Figure (cartoon, helix red, strand yellow):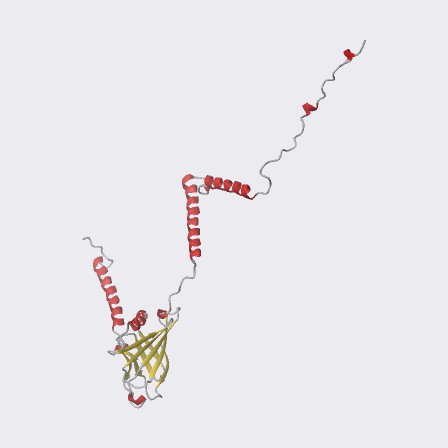
Length: 275
């Protein structure tokens, strides 16, 4: 096999194989990112909703407020913490203590037409709130066609209730947007196809007549003789069908030729007179 050489002198085949391996690795990693989540209900409907978020896999989303920094990842280790889908880091502490808000092995996915609510459970337990239950993160992902991956935003932390406390986050993405349905009717599509074919016929025929045949003037129009004949026949047909005058011509008045008006020679009857 003949090998091409790259500018660096290395075989081109080696570079090609390396690129293919990287692409394959990226695809496998994305697939594993979605499959890493474990749904509590393990229902097919929730898996369908979760697959809508596949473009967001293997991406770290971060947001900060006055006291904390939050890191979110879809079905992946947020901030490198194994099993954590969303973590909280205290900015005031030098060690940046990490608190797991939700684990992706306890995932719920609820979706609508243009939104998905992702819930991570089994986070670290509260010390003094919510009856010391485990933390829970809710990420509300809304449709925004202008953003492939928007910015993560902190909405609130509701820990005033006795149970079912949660952290609420928002994220905009076009991944959850519904597909845009075509508003063109069948008739409109047929008209577009027809005009497109007509345009190709006219432009292609004009170029052929001018450049190949060498026609000039109206002769450059493709199949000029045929269309002229069709036009004449159509005009005759319209005249025959739509005209209002009598189809049988009435005899027209014809003038007498001047030769017929010449006086006939006067007959002489003198010989009949008695002498």
